[in-house]
Image (tube, rainbow, N blue to C red; front, top):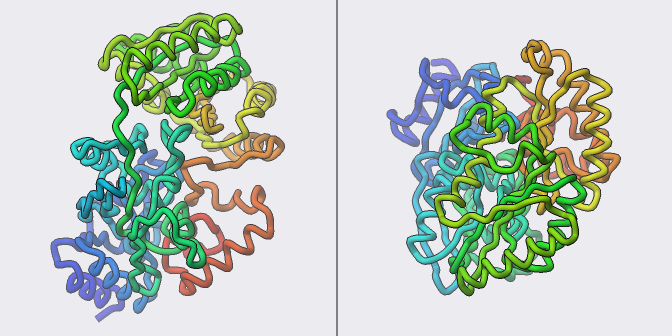
Length: 479
């Protein structure tokens, strides 16, 4: 009996024969969402409980087989698909999707890692609460994946990233032990914060199997406004006014450049994008009010009047109904899909202090235009928390595949160097994955890299958990 055969037999005993998938038909597990990489797994294993996850990890550790944890496989940094060796085990958490408990008095919900984000939102709403994490992939991404990447989304300006929304974790370690930290305490000063260590680690330190997340009261009203602004600086000024007028009611502040919106208009003309043809930038604002819709509308009107007087906006519309509000959000969320329709592109998920974003955009736009004639920039994102999706499209009519092949490294270096000059981060919410692992040491301090390597060695001395992600030197085989 070969080592692989023995491991597969042990895995079948652990989770059941029907939940160990091999052979053809694994493309949904072996290829990333952007179709940037296609690997080949020894098997896809689908445990149904934390104990089964632990048994799978113990079996893989004994066999020396590396594990690739996977949730909805919606990541954008190639962090959850196997390499091409045919030796890695993909550990899919999709069967583990139960809501274990809702504690109304503690304002918490405890969920398993394979639960779809949208289902978690709906469970919270049915119980009379808000779970505010929201993003375009919420119909397919999982809460475990959200935590593994410390996902952000559209309401970070008010509620924070996934890390800020999490009060506790259940984690299977690289040795197959279970750490239960699901207490849901808001105060626990008994040593190192293990929870925050695993959040954002992309499955390289342990496997998140469940989480206790914060809930919030449902707002009485949520209003959406769409404003045309003359410049990125004007958008930043509008953000300042929104904080002054709306306070904690400001739950979303998205910025979109004209070209990004033109792609939505081109590929999805039925969406009727407002105000973009005569403005270089548009902003979408969300105001969540706990008093009433009239109160929310009054605050919004005062904000927009002040913004017009200050010259921050040229024009604005306020959604008059829930369907109109959803339509405006749908335009914003359609930008990545419209960009994909336009062709292959180079994505950047960067963060810079809000005050420095206008200078960063002006400088980097100019550098790219000088470097590549006809380059097209799809610039949009969460201005409220300083996170831009600063994406680069090939010149119109050009060979997009050749552009990606010949220019990606050059463009990434140009953009990341500009981010570094402005004191920013090369990854705000998508993670490092394998796409940026080799770049990370150039933009992270040597001290930080040494501490990260020490943590990896301490928690995963065999290097079996998601090798090649975050820390490139831990790779078994490159994609």
